[in-house]
Image 1: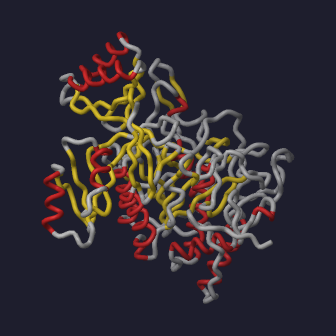
Image 2 (image 1 turned 120 degrees about the horizontal axis):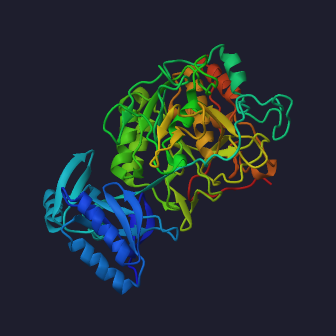
Image 3 (image 1 turned 30 degrees about the vertical axis):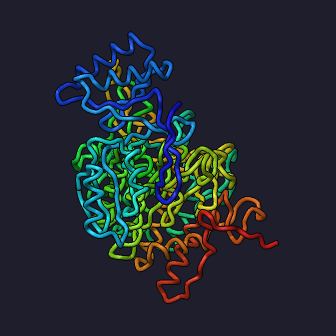
Length: 549
């Protein structure tokens, strides 16, 4: 029977179930090829499945009775090819792996004296890696990080102890299926495209073109929108010459070029280019425009997994390099992912200390499973439920809820994307070709050509909101991140059944569909000295909602 270890993560109680059949292994120095051979041989002799890489680890599933699996895991861990053999944990029945990295995020009680702190560090054989603002990063060499954190959480001198756990990311779009539609109805929906009215409703859009008319411009180049995603084609005609401070957190360089998947064309790093096009594709460069065409792109290429250390680094980079808006069209693959304190702290710092103390606007896609973003123990999206985040749901070209879109009290706003009965979003696609693992030349990107008309999911809704936030901040740069949130929520356009809104908020649509024109008008009014109008805030987790009759 697998052990279940309860831990407090981000203030939430989470049950981590240790897998009885899966193990994470990392190769010994110089033994990577030998470990590859060992794993292939094991797969030939035993009923094992290699579940893929996760950071420096590879997940191996011993598909056999637990007693036999335990023996195989132990033998593999003793192999000279293996430097680390680590337990794999799950937070729900989806079997998404969580693997301890070997470091923990630690904070001691304010009244803990030096002797008590030293006692804990020595007793648990911890190495201090870094310390900042009362928080410590420590490393363990001899203990499982999850079990160690459980013991540390029981220590009177310890206020917080969380293991740094790697888990797969989830990019929140779908794979392509239909032919390209070369029109951007989400910016202005006139109810027809080239005489076709199917899937369109006049006015079911984000009012972006109207906002440009009101501004008399396409936004400001001073506005910096960071997009954290899988890769960026900065040679694309709609993105070329408009980036600043690019960073690849895989290569450790400024080269954010997307990589193809040599064995699955659909699995390449195409997502970030599409998101950047929706947010800020430039006018006159190619064939599409984003919501904020004049804005500057800060392209940040993320790793293929989510580690608290890595995610915090992404947000710290965006904060320290002057991002005004941060767009994140991804979350954890696991259905239950409470936000680690290390990450929550980095997002809070970005949203409150970024942009010269006014705060950067942090926007997250709510997700595509159609479930509640905060319904533990079934679901918990720690990114979307962070109080400083604008969580974005999706609606369609018919002004209806996209059936896949996540719901919940934490949804702030919705924005146009693809959905049942409606049209897809047209955006930039990665240019050029590559040779796959079979020697076949294939297009880089979702489809042949430089554009993709089927972008969808909350992945597309999120950068649309991010671009509009950039437009609004260009109109009034003095708005704080919190004030910007109030502007877009208070000016949102109600869609769906009016009865679904309680105190101005719907669990399906948030405060409604984002209205760029109304938001820009309000921002200009505030810049001219208008009095603030506060929207009813979306209730946070644990708060009650009350109807008005």
